[in-house]
Length: 186
Image 1 (cartoon, rainbow, N blue to C red):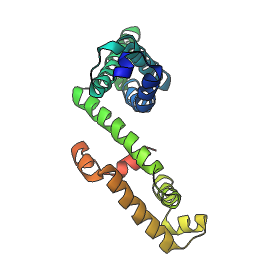
Image 2: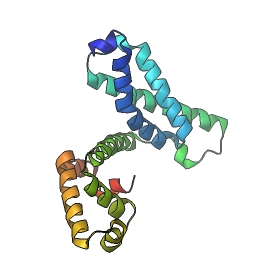
Image 3: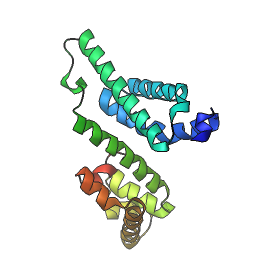
Image 4: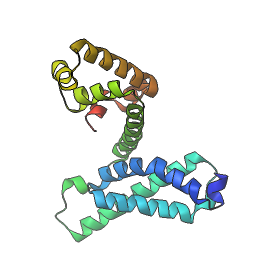
C-alpha cells in the first residue's frame, strides 16, 4: 500500500492485473455490454490512480474499485433509461442482493480459473473435456487416447485438488448454488 500511495506504477499494475478481469465480469453483469463494462472498469482504475494516496489497506482498494464500478454502472443505466424510454428490463439497476451475488460470483470465478490453471496438465485436460465441453468419459478417453479408467482417475484427482485449492463447499453454501454451476461459466 505504501508503494501505491507513493505513486509506484508497478504496484498499480499489480492491482490492475489482480482485479481487472474480476471487475469486468462484475461490470458486464450490470451493463450487459462488454465495451461499456471495460470502460467502467478503466474509469474505476483511473479514479483509483487519482486518489491513490488515500488508501491504507488492500481491502479498501478492493472496496473502492467495486463501488466505483457499481455506481458508474448504475449511473450509465439511469442515463440509458432517460435516453431510451423503451429500455429493456435487463438494463434496470439490480437490487443490492443481486449486486452482492454478482460480486461474490466474480471473485469465485477468478479463484476457480486460477485453481484450474494450477492443476496438472492431465487433470486440467480431463476436467476441460468432461465439464466444459460436456464429453462423456468414453468420448474423453477416445479423444485423449487413454483408458476410461485414466479419465475417471484424473477427474477424481482434479476435483479433489480443486476442492482443496478452493475450499469449495463453504463458498457454494454461502452463494447458494451447485459447484458445477461455475464450471459452465467458462
